[in-house]
Amino acid sequence: MRSPLSPLAPARRRLVLIVLACVVVAIVAVVGILVVHRLAGAGIAEQSRPGPVLLVPGYGGDVDSLDPWVKELRSEGRDVVVLQPTGGGTGDLWAQAARLGDLAERTLERTGAPSVDLVGYSAGGVVLRIYLRDGGGASVVRRVLTVGSPHHGTEVATIAEEAAGGCPKACEQLATGSELLRRLAAGDETPTGPRWATVRTAEDETVTPVDSAELEGALNVEVQDLCPAATTSHGALPGDPVVLAMLRSVLGRAAPTVPEDVTC
Image 1 (cartoon, rainbow, N blue to C red):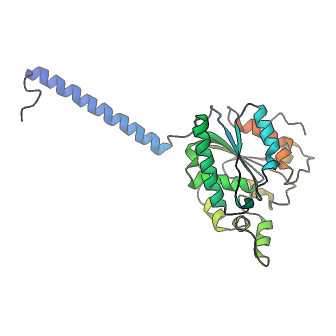
Image 2: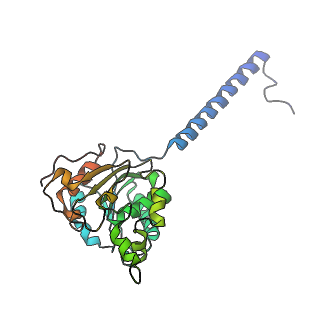
Image 3: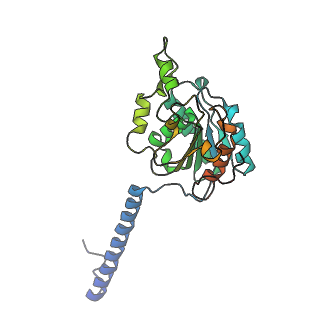
C-alpha cells in the first residue's frame, strides 16, 4: 500500500516524520503527567474553595442537637445539610456511611460545588471516617471536623456490649477494639485529601478515655485548652463556644487553625 507521504520530496518527508514524532512524544508526556498526578492524589479538593457542609449526628441520630451548628454555619453564608440517619441512629455504621456518601453525591449535583466539608458529632465522626476511607469520599471532601468522636472506642460501649443482652449494632462497633475501629486505625488515621481537625472536652463522660477523640495527623483541640474553666459535657459540645469557633477556623478558606476568637 502506497504511503500518503510518498509524493513528498525526501527532505519534506523527513520533516513531516519529525513533526509527527514530536507530536507523539508530547502526547505520551501529557498522558504520563496525568497518570502521575492521579497516582499522587489528583482529584483532591481545592482547599481555597469552601463548598456545602454536611453534618452527621451522633449515636441515636438526634439531628436537633446540631441546630447550633446549622445556625452558625448559615450565618456565615454556608449551604448546610444534616444527614438523616435510619434505624434510630443506632444501626450499622457502615450503612450510615453509605447514606452519607449518597447525600454527598446528591449535594454536589444539586449545588454544582466541587467539594463538601464534613462535620461529625460523636459517632458521626466515625461514620464520616468510614465514608472517607472506604466510600471514595477522600477525593470530594475538603475539610473534616469531628467533635467528641470515639475514634478509638469508648469504655461506655464496651461495658454495654458485655452486659447481659448486649447493645445495638452501632454500640458494638464503638466498643474499644471492635473490628470496625481496628480497620479504621490500620495505616493512616487521616487519609490524604481532606484537612482534618478534632475537638474534645476533658469533662466527657461518654467518650472515655477522652483522648479517644483525637486522631493522629489532625489538628487536635481540647475545649479546656482555650477555656480552662469549662465544664462542657459530651452532650453540651454542639453548643460550646470553642466548638462553634472551630467551625469557623477549620471550615474557612485558610488552613485549619486553633481559633483565637473564643468568648469563654
